Amino acid sequence: MLAAQKQRIIELFQAALAPLVAGTDLQPTVTLERPRDPSHGDVACNLAMQLAKPLKKNPREVAQALVAALLDNPANRDLIESADIAGPGFINLRLTAASRQEVVKTVLQQGPEYGKSKAGAGKKIIVEFVSANPTGPLHVGHGRQGALGDAMSALFYAQGYDVTREFYYNDAGVQIATLATSVQARAKGLKPGDAGWPESAYNGDYIQDIADDFLAGKTVAASDGTPYTASGDINDIESIRHFAVTYLRHEQDLDLLAFGVQFDNYYLESSLYSDGKVQSAVDALIKAGKTYELDGALWLRTTDYHDDKDRVMKKSDGNYTYFVPDVAYHVVKWQRGFTQAINVQGSDHHGTIARVRAGLQALDIGIPQGYPDYVLHKMVTVMKNGEEVKISKRAGSYVTLRDLIEWSNGETPEGTEPVTVRDLTRGRDAVRFFLISRKADTEFVFDVDIALTQGDENPVYYVQYAHARICSVLAQWTDGDESTLLDVDLSPLVAPREATLLAKLAEYPETLQRALEELGPHQVAFYLRDLAGELHSYYNAERVLVDDVAVKMARLALMHATRQVLRNGLALIGVSAPARM
Image (spheres, rainbow, N blue to C red):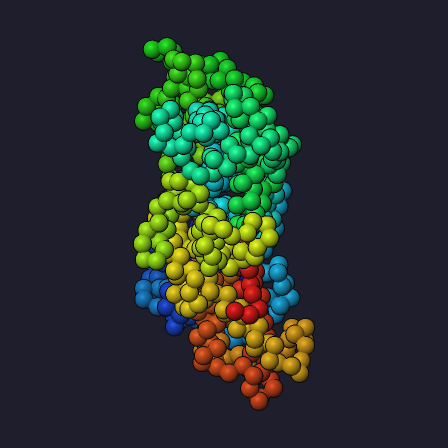
């Protein structure tokens, strides 16, 4: 059901309500739902059930009064074909055939804009995702964040929000120091297992690559930074650190390029310290009386804000704990005008939520409770050739995002050309679709073998093939112009499969709204799979290019509209819509 039709039905119910609630203070809300069983109709409403008790009437009696008034209203204008009362008083409505068919014209008129709205106009939102430490290649967990965060950003943008995609670089702290000493050890000729190899060092082959380029005095640059040239001096630990971080940021840029993810802004953790943001936040918390000292450490009274215990902010050695810069960072987000902030992170960040929110509330600067929102994802298990893959030659201890893209592209990562000159569309599409096809808080098994198959068990192929199948049908229609399909007579679309497909097309805008409200882009993947299923079923049940011209034109218009919605949904989640498979 289209949004305009839903609003008309709500107004019809409101008009029917007026005489029933006259003289009372009742202000019932009209809620419309889609019946679970399509045979029950197109729209269900439980309004009579809400009103029966306060009106002291039988719910079926109330339902009968509502239905009679609704159908007698001249504003109905052939919108509703019939109304039934089920059970104790549920009202089930069936739309007219013309009302169901209206979605085809709406889709063809709006094209790529179908499903979008201006509901979020004037609202700024920041979505932070990936935010990997620049200490190694991006792993498959970062890939899940990338797919979720990018699709979520697209959802908000499609509803009119001013969206900023941000990557927060943790370029300060112990891990960066470990990276520098790891590269230095490699530069000195050491390798994992040798005497003198640092116990906490990173062991992947990429460390040797960084060391070799550092010794060669090469120049590297990240996408948002100035080039940096290595000094080549193995005793210059600061140059090693700077070069290694920039080198890995550049490598992560290439991974993101292969994945089709772009960011609007990069924010460095180190800047929170150099700009005094961390110290400013700490000073404000002390001034507000929200801290105390114990055992040489500075503590925050997080129990005042529903945490299970108070938390250390500054350890006895003078170093801040990891949630303190996060508090400062979110103050900056708020000051930048982002009234809503969403963080897409791994489930290991669960313990951070209460601490960061407590710190923000303790500052008492107008930040609402529950700021920021968190979408936490669980781990991804990678299967290949029937076995779990746990390590990567590149990284030494985990499967990288680039490995996954290349495997899903039908390639062997070792020895392939640079990502910038290869077509990785197939691999990227599979990885992106797979990684948002489950709720973020569920564990996910990525089976590379399934990603490479061309059959119904591969969900991205199944959806893309639906799009390609329609392209094939339209290409076979050689005696017409697609632009003329907007004005065809749709009345022949009365077959059961056509009614189901029309209803599914009408669900798309509401699917996007629901996915946004629940921060669940997986719902878009679910919808696309369902829509593709309806298309395949319809294609197998009915011929499109029939001799009857009126039927053929109506079915071609339906095909064209379905292709457009598939294309819109795939674009939103960053997956291509090929014309051929």
